[in-house]
Length: 380
Ligand SMILES: NC(=O)c1ccc[n+]([C@@H]2O[C@H](COP(=O)([O-])OP(=O)(O)OC[C@H]3O[C@@H](n4cnc5c(N)ncnc54)[C@H](O)[C@@H]3O)[C@@H](O)[C@H]2O)c1
Ligand SMILES: [Zn+2]
Ligand SMILES: [Zn+2]
Image (cartoon, rainbow, N blue to C red; front, side, top):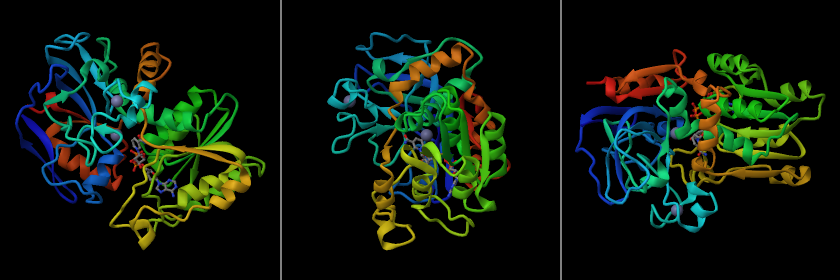
């Protein structure tokens, strides 16, 4: 079958790889019809991780069940399903608590597994014709037959992840929220904040198409290329700051003049933006080691964050991988009911064989490349 394979920094290729097969009675094989490219894939694409050449990318996957293992009870051939990017067992201590992003079974020695991702276990990615899904009864969310595939594919990661940012920050009706980053995750966080009844949502970025999408959904765009975003938001909140804040940027945060990376800049801006006793949700990714980091501390995942100011303001922060399974059923039902249409974030839908160009353009954030969905089924 065809699959998107990592070759070397800034290079992926569509190559022939072995078809997946049932390896355990609880597996299913899914024929992939949509697989999205994520900002997290870019960390591997840019050679910032220990990802080895040959890894098949793709942790945001939707498709049709083609084959079921003998132990699978709830799925049949022909079912349309979307999988959380987390691979989880459903029965360990963390899964039972709903923390499926930290499953203790699927990736020995590490809490949490994912498809097609370095250090997240042996699971191949779904930017391919077919995908093996382990613990399939737990990991597959069934979807109705409908023309909403571009909305449903976002249930694999970014819609729940944006929602998770709001849950970590406990965004509540009537509140003001600052979301840093207008990438797919930031836009989904802003959208989720509005779904949760926030009164005012600010979205900070410097990419104009992305800020425009934020405006379209009813958020207030803040362009950090025009100056420090903190006073811009302070001015609009009567000097008080926002009730809540979400970091949807992570360690690739840029300095305000975009001349270099400043990995702690968004965390520090959030501490300054959010009012005393407010909460910060940090789905943006930070790593325990970053060989390309700008200084010795950053290379070891240690950042200069103003913990003193956080203490002074009595703020609370939550972070980590999204537990997609905790939210995906409810968010699916909001889509089915017509109450959520997250697909506004999707800018490109392309056949699998255009993955190399799509990665290149998405990485450069050019031509309005906000979120790309690949369709293997169209590639033949
Ligand atoms: N926690 C999870 O489960 C989870 C899941 C998916 C993605 N992520 C992470 O979420 C983050 C965002 O993902 P994405 O796909 O939206 O990525 P992205 O790279 O497309 O978007 C990040 C955006 O942040 C903007 N930005 C850079 N510096 C900034 C600054 N100082 N202030 C404000 N904005 C700034 C960029 O211009 C870009 O538009 C990444 O770190 C990704 O790895 C986490
Ligand atoms: Zn993702
Ligand atoms: Zn588990």
